[in-house]
Length: 316
Length: 290
Image 1 (cartoon, chains in turn green, brown):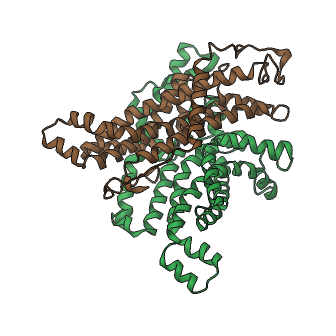
Image 2 (cartoon, rainbow over the protein chains, first blue to last red):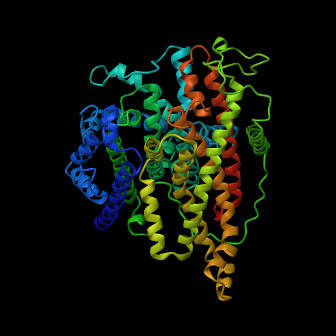
Image 3 (tube, rainbow over the protein chains, first blue to last red):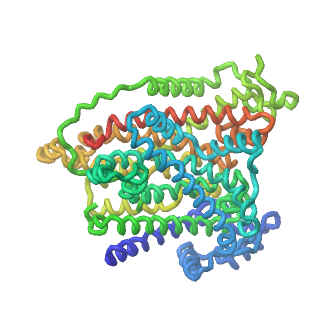
């Protein structure tokens, strides 16, 4: 097990280096000189040259990359030239919002997907099963910004049940905070449940034919206990995998949903950095998000290996 | 990486499985809708439509009329014309970007699956790096630097599709490369190029094509999302995503301005998904796996 973790960790190093290199190259090679952006209207050739020298922009690109990477490894991701805030401050302020959103969304997605999957697996082939499988397939074609519009229209504009946009910190007013999160999280959950349901359903259909399920029935266990405890347990691996695969889409979805619902999360930070051309923040956020994504995938791989010994012994 | 992992069961290549799949009415409905959208988008210049960018401030958010079949939007522009010209953007980006993906990704995947070894490691490793970026984030960052244009959008979305196509092509090649007809060709002294192009490509092409249609659906969605955020095609060009974004502002007064492009987009994406998924099931190289 330790050897397996070490191997995967070792593999992580080149991936992370390549990710940082790509992030840096996107920011450096593409048109638009940072010095011009910062100086704006006041850009004269002299001032630009002076600022470029101050910021080290006149050095060769590989030197700048190594310098930047060195700072990043020391925890210094740079500082926004617009707000003066460091990237780390900006990210740590907004990360909890995005994490809460993604957590609630995944919980809601599981809450919709798992019971539906079980209900469909029990009556596989029935009208209900076909209806839900069909709806799940149709839902896969509904992008997050579409369902967001629909939910806002339904619950905020027509019914006035929930606020359309806004945010209150959790420690200020927990109820209000959750009310603001219901629609955004539901939007993301609507994109999550079809995947969860489809995979879990086929998993469950196979599991329900196993001998130990028949044994559990013969022992006279209640069917809810059989379904939710005995039959669901072997599918935990599948659920973890789906959750892992979902993370990438959740992060992308969070960008859109945070913008639509005006939640001050990482996604909003990114979009506003783009519109104000705040390149340092943009570069920092992309690096943090991509790095976090790689680490999350690593953790999912590890969980997977813990649950299924065949993987760490290389028989996958 | 836990993303998009394709598990390849290498021992399932038993005899051909008799599998008669009925193409249901839904499949044909999807085809008809796709043809309709294609035809209307292709003929947009010929059709007797009002100009999609002509504003009429006196006719803002006008209901449907003989002149404006679907009414007008918040700036008095004809909604139907904007929908149809928007279809052009969605289809051009949606089709061209996966072409980039299928060409580069397909070639890399076939080479990796055929030659194996260090080259395969290198390709798979670089794809892992590309996959390390949540796709929408990378698309946002790159369009922010490159500037918003249809070409840039198509290129970046195309590059983002490469890893997925590479995986499909590699998976198909890995199983096919051990089949008798490839071994026979090798024994006859065929060159690598000949085996790749004449023996493997025709067989890898079908699963890739099915995946291509799914790629079109995903690309239309991502283009829509970027345009919705105002970071896709620059205004005043209409795109379904930007129309939904603009319609969101008047959700309380005229919800149809958001819902019309939304429904159009949903039906189109659903059609591509439906046809792609059906073809994928029909052409799955893992024949026993269904």
